[in-house]
Length: 261
Image (cartoon, rainbow, N blue to C red):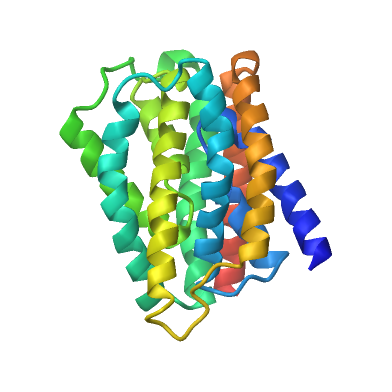
């Protein structure tokens, strides 16, 4: 158990440092580590990832709040949609998608398009990109957040890795998107982890999180998230997006091959 705790601490810290400046908790990239390196069973892997978000989230959020980046109602509107969505996603994950084969395919379906989209948008010439548009309406934001919440509840990522790129593509600056996406991720992860704890009482499978691993990764993410949020003003946005796109594409491709072989 000792090596697992230290390895989880290091993994959470390194991933959060890279992803927090872009508004992603890092759980989307930590999940394959849980699955392949630590061997967390399915579906317990999802609440373990949510537990990471709960512990790690306050690090980046505290730094963003200190810098005044959490002002405005964007985070609140996102949470209104993601909170009910994550509960529904948790129920779907436990009762409809328990198999590891299906889970690997789901990882690939989510990560491959996301990663390719991030890479293409980052490398495309500015003249080919759409003009900046206004913030989506409250109804559109709620509908988007609801769908992302369901996916986040199934996948254990909180939704920030999906909300961030979509909102940035609509023209919202990363200085607004990143804090709001992380705040929504933290709120939905708290609700999602609670939902899984309740569902573990109703299911005989591996539904409860791996507490030691989730907490150790979360502590690493707590420190890494703070450092990443502090670094955001000093890092080029395109570099961060391209790195996230490459990571997502690589992980999604790996699990697509595993699911199809």
